[in-house]
Length: 186
Image (cartoon, rainbow, N blue to C red; front, side):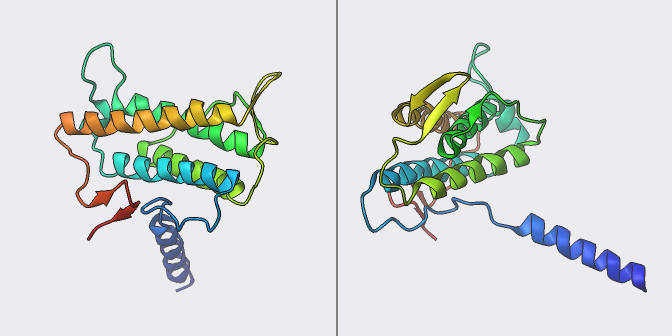
């Protein structure tokens, strides 16, 4: 009887972990003010929402698709976005870059990207001045401006590639997703 209860408890815990919602199904409510941090946070939220839906429902066929032999596959593009999301989070946490990502499944990479973006957004949201936040590579420190035109803009670009590639591989972008409002129409 004790082992049955332990097994039921284990299944309950696994279900709770697996059923936790990923961030960015929809964009969070906007800030009341237009501070530097609120604007940067909203840009990251927009990226998170676009990535959530660009990557939602991708199949192995989609992940392996590339339009030309010289192109990255969608899976390789997601690996690149994972690295960019880490640079964005590291900037928000003022941590140096350069750490290697462990091996992960697509599902784990997707969750890590979305959670990295959410953490970065939450850190920046209430800041009025972003001058304290730096992108750090070795002994070089770059101002947060570089996060906007660098990894944030680059990741947005690559989300568009994933959407284009998934259409080309026969799996179009989900209907009802409005990137303008950040909501899903039912």
